Length: 118
Length: 116
Image 1 (cartoon, chains in turn blue, brown):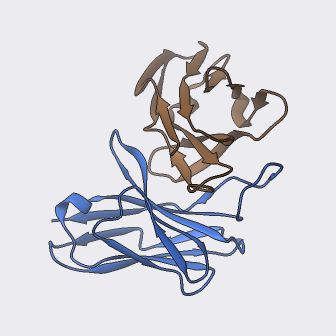
Image 2 (image 1 turned 90 degrees about the horizontal axis):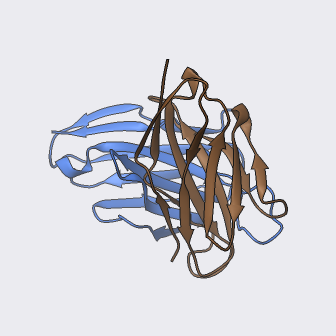
């Protein structure tokens, strides 16, 4: 059981280049998230998805796009990379909608993608 | 919208000493609360969670946390730390209702440094 897998693990881009980060989960989770982690800023939510075919903006969505064509995959795209997007990116997944009485509420994280834009 | 404040960005402590990492949250609706740990160059793993019931919850590696609804706090404690506890710790919240239902929002993290 792989859990949440992110590819690639490392990448260096030149300013203006594009790339796609892939997140795959094998737990049949409905919810998936993309975060970026920067020193002193914690994890900030970029985009999220509550199911196949749906996406929504998080706290810092500008400069990123996402797609959830298949339930198990959540793609994060950078159309024109900028140095400000240098960060560590984490994908996470959760089972689904949370309501009072839910027990399996925690998120499972990938190992991260370290992206440098020069 | 909910938010999470971790009051200390860095906490240095000597080995075998007790430690408390503080977390306060704000939300207009009921929430679930979590503590995650991140070891260097790794992803996040769950330490413990509060869903309902007893306000004192126990997690892995000897950590525990107490939910205080009146003070909107969820502080993490360990009575005796080890060198291996050196890591960054994140408090997080999920709202049960409302427009941001299901979003997992994190604090900015607390770096725990355990010295011999």
